[in-house]
Image 1 (cartoon, helix red, strand yellow):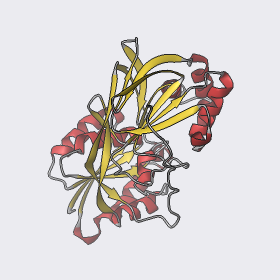
Image 2 (cartoon, rainbow, N blue to C red):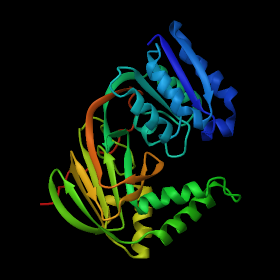
Image 3 (cartoon, rainbow, N blue to C red):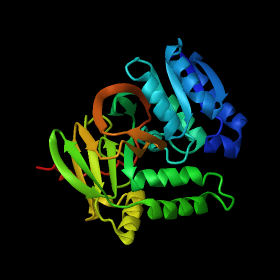
Length: 309
């Protein structure tokens, strides 16, 4: 990598908290060894166009500083191009950046990028559009919807999350849909469905990004307490021990419903998508910068999940 383009989302939490100049200064370390590093701070609405232009540019690598939504745009644009994607964890959840072993600290993340090695990873798809981590409907999408409505809550970020959870609980209810898992169909009554790209461990990190698998999680407990527990278990990573959540692996998942559209949240972005929802896998479709291995290995995922008969 001789030419690196860095696009920083101007509204990403890290830039808002620290300001762009300290981030720019830290990123200067990427220029070691004679690399050319071009850094741009981009307004959120301009990020899609800037990332699309980056995919066509002469740069060898694109580094995106933002949350999972910015990483989603970049992954979609760079898939299959041969260009390398690096991700700085400047957003809220930063699931993808964590799986790429990027520390939350700015200087440490830049150092990890400098020591990173290219690696091919899988992308999942929703109706043909790639995503890097997860996609959900039902309670999960209502959480995302309520979170969007409570952004900038006057009493602070954490109270805003609590308000979002209460709104999601009030709006959510059991719904019936048909799911086809690798062609095997069943009708399910559930309050939420989550589809992940490869399998997450109990701490919401993936031991591998190249399994070539989807994992489907179905939350079937419709009571308020069941919803609250499912939400808490999903946040803390304890869903595999929740009897109200059923999990299974697959390479293709189709979710059908009598409604024409459904709220979905995919890599943190909320969209009202057309039904049915078709999920698939694109093995090793994206080349990323993977940071050095952690001293503490990611806990392995249990392998007792099976698809419905």
